[in-house]
Structures are given as C-alpha cells and as structure tokens.
Image (cartoon, rainbow, N blue to C red; front, side, top):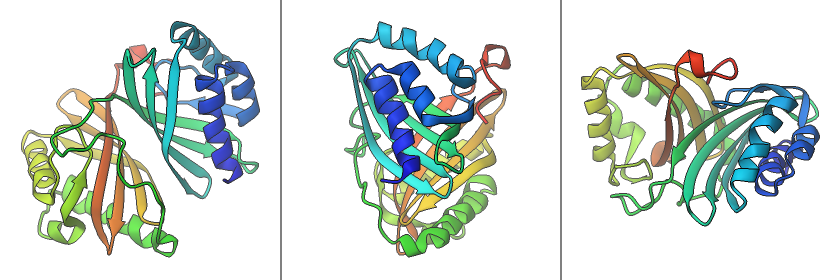
Amino acid sequence: MSTRLEHAKGLYLEGIRDGRVREAITSHTGERYIQHSAGVADGVEGFTAFFEPFVARNPKRQIEIIRAIEDGRHVFVHVYQSLNDGEAQWVTADLFDTDESGRIIEHWDVISAFEGTGPSGHTQVDGACEIEDLELTEYNKGRVRLFITEVLQNGDFDNYDDFVGEDLIQHAVGLEDGREAMRYRIEDALDAGAQCECVFKLIGQGNFVVSYSKSVMGDEAVAAFNIWRLSESRIVEHWSNIETIAPRSEWANSGKF
C-alpha cells in the first residue's frame, strides 16, 4: 500500500470508523486541508467540528473501503457505510489530492443512500475490485474521456457500441445490465435537457477509470462520480454516485468542485 493510500484510508478508518477524529485529521493531512464535502468547513477544525458530533450521534459505525484507485498524486476510494446496525446506509465516493509527502491536502466527495440490490441483480458497491492492465492506464483514460465527450456531452451515439460492452455489468441505481439499458437512460436524460457541463477530474489505474463531473438540468445541478471498468477498450462494468448540489447559501466551504 502506498503512503498516499495509507493516509486516505487512515482518515476514514481511524478518524470516522474508530472515532479518533482529531488524531486522524492531524496525522493524515498536510499543511492545508481544503474541503468540498457538503457541510464540512476547511482545515483540521472544520473536520473536527463536523465529525466529532457525527461520531457521538452514531456510536455503531461499520465502514468498508471496497475499492481504491491511485493516479499520481490523486487517490480515490469507494466506500460502504452502515450506521447504528443499518439504521442508515450510505455509499460514498471520495477523491483526495495529496502533497509531496503523500499527506491529504484536498478532498471531494459524493454521498448517496445505499439502495440494496437493483434491477440488475447488483448493488452499488459489489462487483470487480482487482486492478489489472496497468500498462493500459492512459489508453483507458482516453477511451473514457472520448466516451464522455462524444456521448454524454455531444449526444453522438454513432460509436456507442464501440465504447460500451454488450454485456455491461451495471451498478447504477435503477438500471438493468446491458449496454442498451444505459443507452436508453442517457438518451432520456439528454431529451429531458440534462447536460454534462464539465468533467472536473478524470483519473485511472489500469482497467479502472474514475470521472468526477457536474451535470445540470434546468435550475438543478448534480455532482457525480462514475467508476468505469474497461476490458479490450470497452466499458464492461459501471458504478455511479450522484448528489444534488445544495444552494450556495448552505455551503460550508468553496463548494463541490
């Protein structure tokens, strides 16, 4: 495990799961800690002010880091949380930027309710975890970047079948397996006026690529993390986490991006 990943996991497991909030935030962050999680202010004090009461409210905390992806100075973790014996269950997607020593200096996240098994027969967090094909990292990132540009942003489906495997394994809420189900979902969203406004971050490691984007429809904007697993240049498995962006008046920091 790299130093960067140790710090990212430590902040979660030591700070939130184990309840050592101040100890973890001071041990795993750098000289600055910029926060983009809704309701959490910047810095050590902002993290402590939010999570010490959180820990007190939720004495039983089951936290599992399902996937971890590294790309240069960035680390991504895909996490399942169960609070108070399942009273609340969450899926979080977290991206961390790190300094030269590997300590965390900035954090973005998207939090969604855990919905259990969907129509595909899968949950939001199960599925493949093993990182393979490290030599294809940049190629796979390019494939996802092109898919987002051509299909999600430009609505061009001419090459859709070349981007997405026929037997796509789907973990997004409400979707069945297969590339046609995802195509219909994208087409319906575009027809309704949804627009992928920007891709803020795109990182990858081998056969996994993670994109963090902002989409808008009318007056509503959402932040979305998508995890794409590729094989032989096609997307063959997909997870997503989506969160409505709160009004600016409710931000405790500089916002989701």
